[in-house]
Amino acid sequence: MTERKHGRAPRRAAAAAALAVSAVVLPLPTSPLTGTAEAAAAPAVFSPASSSDQLRHGDSGAEVKEVQKRLIELGYWIDSADGHFGTVTVQAVHALQKAAGIDRDGIVGPDTREALDEGVRPSAQSSSGEVVEIDLERQLLLVVSDGEVEQAFSTSTGSGETYEQDGEEHVATTPTGEYTVFREVDAWDPGPLGALYKPKYFNGGIAVHGYTSVPTYPASHGCARVSLPAMDWLWESGRLDVYDTVLVY
Image (cartoon, rainbow, N blue to C red; front, top):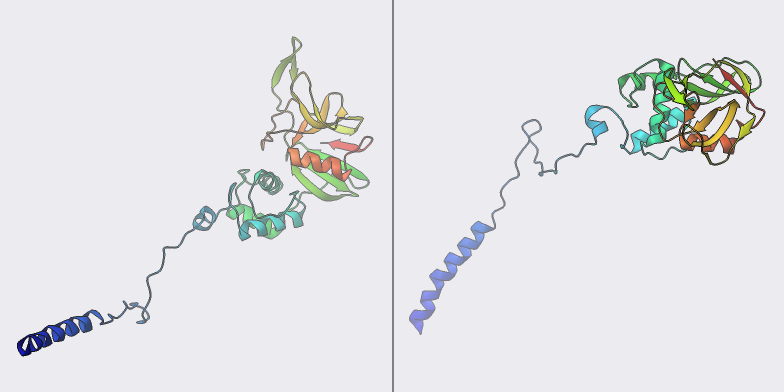
């Protein structure tokens, strides 16, 4: 019995020593710049906008929201500053880029940021009254009150190309001049060249209307296209009613 008790002591001492070794706390690695201990950190996650200093369709966050607020402040129409870079924001960026005379890529890069910082706004042609202006050169549709541009939209007008209708050739143009809205349809209006969304006719079959595609260049048969949400706003705002003036130049 005595020998067995004495035999346990060396084993207990060895176990205690091993436990002591395992409890040693090793120092954390130090920073070569500060000499302070730093815990390991998870790798940073960057959005495409952060890594390339650009904002584009599909991005979201606080920076997008600030851009949207600035666009709204300058009069480029957006339905809301929701922090999501969707199609409506792309159209507003297109409008700004058209007014600034820079690349119409829909991306908020250095040139577009500069235009936002400088407060670039399109000017109106008319000086009095409530007028909707269609600027063919800049491809902009402007809602104007007494010479002040209140809202600016990207538009796409007549392409200048020939097309055939009812066996006859026509040229896709948007004629210049001063007109009056004489007919409107609060729905998709079917026609020989396709359906138009909530059109406001001001010159024969030529109208301001919504469309699913609004390129940055002239692409229509003669109408002035805007986005579907933009056309909804024109109806709801009452800024393009029957008898209102449309100035094309």
